[in-house]
Image 1 (cartoon, rainbow, N blue to C red):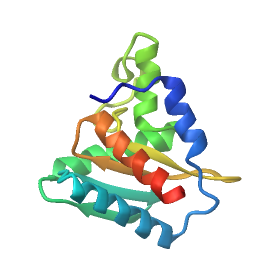
Image 2 (cartoon, rainbow, N blue to C red; image 1 turned 120 degrees about the vertical axis):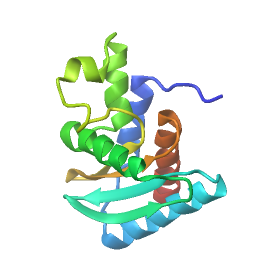
Image 3 (cartoon, one colour; image 1 turned 135 degrees about the vertical axis):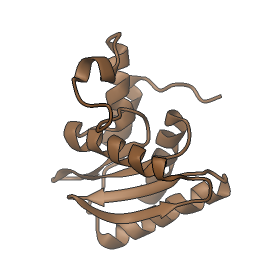
Length: 154
């Protein structure tokens, strides 16, 4: 059983998982690493990497559906708007005793503060994009992305 991370633990992940640069080749390598991790687990996910409004990587693994692409877009928009992981944005609302849907006043068909989208942060530049997974329960989506980022950056 995976324990639910605290807001502080999620914020620490974001501070730690920062790139010195992020190129097209990095997007391919990171996306390919995520595909490899997902295949090992037979995870029915879709994977997406966006930078500055451009899709640099996309993969749909067996068992994923077009609905996963819609979830990717909704979660990615949360990262683009708030500059934080979609799971962290949701956790911040839950920590205040509310929900993102109830207090953000944003259209839930456009934004989803559910786990699975993580900011691509470059030192000195800030958030330049997002890496997103959809297809598993939200904490598992989030943890899969974090695991890939940790491996890639180490």
